[in-house]
Length: 228
Image (cartoon, rainbow, N blue to C red; front, side):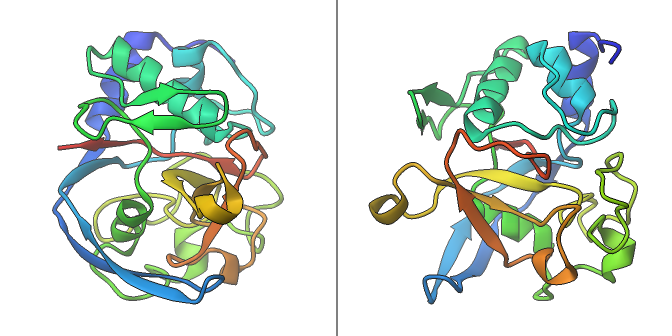
């Protein structure tokens, strides 16, 4: 893959951040049979999933299973994703959000750098003011098992949601900052959104999965956020 200049990636990422007004959202976890309401502060979130071109320009690495500069970066673990956020933040002259340890990280909520969205931020942004489980007909909005052809696709190829965010459902799952249930699962982190190999039922706004922060697979990537 041809390298994209770092300065070009920094500018592209900044230009593609979408401002989201704060609000409240009701979340639920079917596995734990729980419901709760979360307050979401105003934040910024990426219009697109992080692409391979941007990831490689920041890290110098290209671990991807499905190669293509505008395809989403995948086979990236949670720890690698937050390390990317820190490197991008420093390169952009922003304060890094994470202090990394062996299998986890502490987040500085006051830092102005790039980070992963929280679980609540992700669902709030995905639903875009709607209570619907999907923001349109699945074939129009997402790359999933029924139309992906067994691969990822360039970001932004399907219709966005009402807030102009692409691929919130399908293409690749997206890491969130949050621990899932530390008392039961230790350092496991949440990921959201469904991927190219999932059925329509796997690509819904309320779906939540979890895995170890070192886990990496070709249907799991990430999207950037920033605090305002």
